[in-house]
Image (cartoon, rainbow, N blue to C red):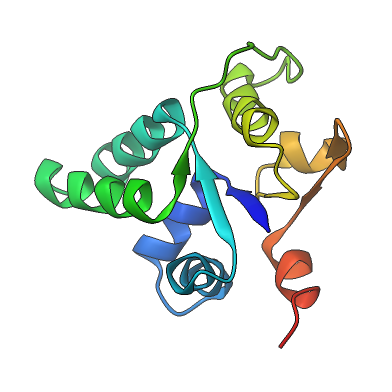
Length: 134
């Protein structure tokens, strides 16, 4: 199953270990799901770790490398313009479309408000985990 874990989910997995986001990331580490990302999403992830959480650049770079190594890094071919209130959220949709993912997992209200996009369910982490086999 291919899944885009939005940047906010990855940030929570790395900055606040022990919660649901870390559980989803561990699923990717274990190969239960295939994590999908893109160069723009990876750059956002690293940038947020540095700017908002004060991570050193090399520590953030190591986290980005780990996500890139275990994930499928896609280069979207078509721009998406759906989320007017926060166009950066469109990068998540672009990655999802490029990899034909099964789910987008996010805590972002703009994305969650969509409910689904191009047939791809957009769900909070709790819903995603509740629907995974034991």
